[in-house]
Image (cartoon, rainbow, N blue to C red; front, side, top):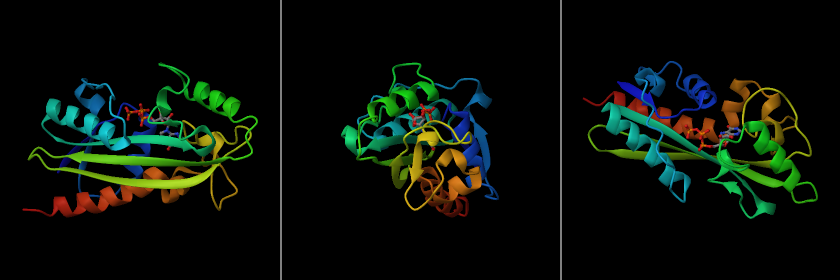
Length: 197
Ligand code: ITT
């Protein structure tokens, strides 16, 4: 079975490859095809956007396509940045721009609760579509902590842990994270699908 990863984000690819290690599937990245047809993420939910991305790549490659849409929801900001997490500080914003804006918006807030949610969509050439999700709760830290990971990892500390995601190794983060949890379900699904005749 071949699966093409429908993401332009290298950091996600790294976590996906680690989570799917040992599976009997060949993982291809969309850059392999030199045509990442980055579709517009016009959906209002993570599910909708994950399906938009996987369907677009399936259409181009005719191969099973797996996407990831992730959002950080901050309670004191009424769920923002949510589906707009990648462009919180504007189109073309860097991870650093987004973290800076988040810390600024949260400066005077004592309520720091937040959660990450990931939806992984898998679309197959036979028309079947699957979505699985994973979530983790935590808090927005008062400043950046750690150099590992990516995105909002330096400003997010999962509940029950002393370290921010950016202070954890990739293996540690994948074990408990939103994406790690969604990919664990996706792994089971892919395993079952690869055994189909
Ligand atoms: P693709 O759509 O190509 O997959 P993207 O980076 O645009 O890549 P999203 O639309 O899912 O992906 O945007 C989510 C943003 O949230 C992403 O750019 C990061 O800034 C952040 N993010 C996603 N996963 C994260 C994680 O595990 N830790 C920290 N921040 C994360």
